[in-house]
Amino acid sequence: MSINLKKILLVDDNQLFLKMLSKAFKKSGIECITAESGLEALEILKTITPAAILSDYEMPDMNGIEFRQRLMDDPVLNNIPFVFLTYITDKELMVKGLNLEAVDYVTKDTPVNVIVSKLNNLIYTVHKQQELSKQELKKAAEALNVRSIPNKTPVVDGFEINFWHQPYQDIPGGDFIDFIQVDNRYTFIVLGDIMGKKWMAWFFTFSFLSYVRAAIRFGILSNDYSVASILQKVNNVICYDDVLKDILSSLSLLMIDNETNQISYSGAGDLPLLHYEAETGQLKKVYADGILLGLLANSVYTEQRINLGKNDQLFIFTDGMIDFSTDKGKKSDYDGFTNNLKSFLNKSYNFKELETDLFESAPAARVDDCSIINIYRTA
Image 1 (tube, rainbow, N blue to C red):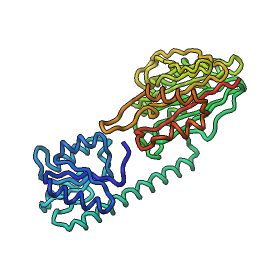
Image 2: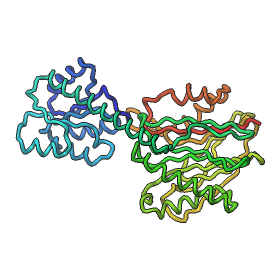
Image 3: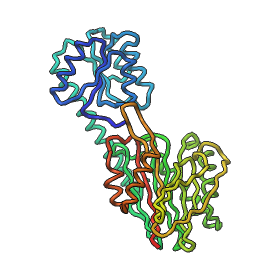
Image 4: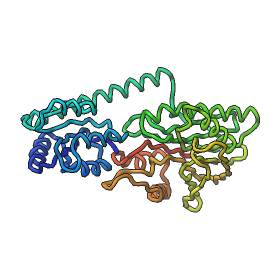
């Protein structure tokens, strides 16, 4: 769910007050979504993430304090700025509300234009602080030279490799990509997606990438080029790592052998790859049967060989490419994405055109990081 800086949620069982305040916010350029109870508000918050929430205290079934507590227990909703709006001026009650990390307590006899100004200032201040925090984290990552997404793709004889990545809400998240060329013959391709959102998932990407890179290097030193064997080693290390043992991740691991022109593939809880056959115009799924990394130690992973004909293409992607928000909540549509991709490929679209016309077409509906890698057989 993306945060809308021009949308707030107002919760109050007084319909007249809801209409009056909504009208005032609308004049200031802010859309006001209304709910007449805490329970109704919780349903609305399943599909919408507002910039702020204003809630009355005295409501039937669930009062404002109870409603705030429910939000505090939800990791997705607990960071939305919350303001109590009520006629009650009891100091103990105010302290109780503020102890639940409410940012303000406004009485209903406050002039409407002052309430609107307060919310405008709150939204602006919170947004600026979030932007500053993001910039500081980005600067720190750049200073440490840590990246979960590469700057460029490798040059591989007989193949062309491209990728597209869009972080959710422009905040680095749990998707990670890497290309590892061990020599002139073998190139490894890594695409992972750590369970979680934004910075929390991003912090773990470097640990996962380090283990993957180390497993590949140690495998090569012992002449073990099996992607399934490498995946198994990575999974075992993660399962026995005290810091990472409860962190789960999908992973697609591929190795291009440009002497045999074969691609070896093993997957851990990833989406089926898509193989586009240029000669027939068909888009076929390539399945892996491995479970998520970190889920179970000593899990067995299998691998398969993929043969691309001339002008064939292979697509590897994370679930952000198929997930989007609707009025009824998050929806996943793998088949819809496949059909859209197929229609563009049959029109001879290249990857750059796919980026512009397909991948970037509906950014407002995105609900997660989006990553896709394309392998194109040129000869």
